[in-house]
Image 1 (cartoon, rainbow, N blue to C red):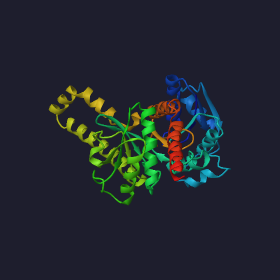
Image 2 (image 1 turned 45 degrees about the horizontal axis):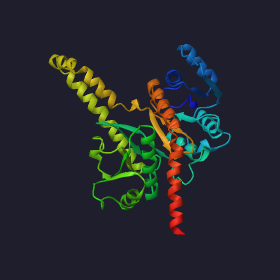
Image 3 (image 1 turned 90 degrees about the horizontal axis):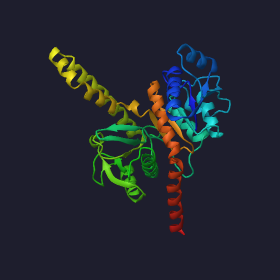
Image 4 (image 1 turned 60 degrees about the vertical axis):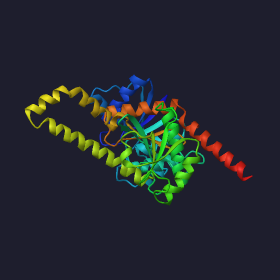
Length: 338
């Protein structure tokens, strides 16, 4: 398996990226294509004693800044590492593409260079988030601020297929983010999406309120991109501040410091469970080929974990599974109309 990686995406490029790739090659037995400025990549590897074995470097002349116009990636003469990486994937020169770069450009590249899956309305960011009893997927978390009910229905189908094939969740419980659990709650968007999700070939369990999400009440949370991004950022912010608060309590006095020693292993375990870096990044579901958006602040371990999810995504044949469901539904709808 060959994974294409944007060597200049994110805040810690290229060092943390190539370190993560080195670790992933050892753990997952893959080959990597690094896309970027070769001299900079090689110098970083040499200075930090990182092996580039099983890593091919494809030259890119520029880096795509986080504040760059996302639409610029569509231009044929765009020679940024992200644009070149997307074109390599579209040409079949790798099995998947990862980048920690510009989120908007990731949506545009997935949609217009790699292309969307047939009959899929929009691609969506779908990060895996920690919960009290495991994890859940949040789809969409920011790719589409405005959504239609049909888009939310497809998000539910795509999220369910991913959780089953990659995260090994049997009959994933799919819920719709809403302001109440009752069927009539929400705007027209939520009420219409509820009716569609109820008829979709998934294990739809109804609406879910924000307070129930951390408890692990479902495996897939479906939301429009605006609401999903608010859930994502609030969730991450509360988790970080809560951990800081707990740390502050244990540092408050000698008595508290002694108490901290007694629960240190449990605290480390909890911190790891609520660290989003454990999952690495988010698949861009709806793309016709595997694309992963890695966290912008990704460390080497984050990137390694993201590659691990990508390997599972490819091996799980997620795209074909989603396509089969959507195509079978379209066939049945056409048959009913005739």
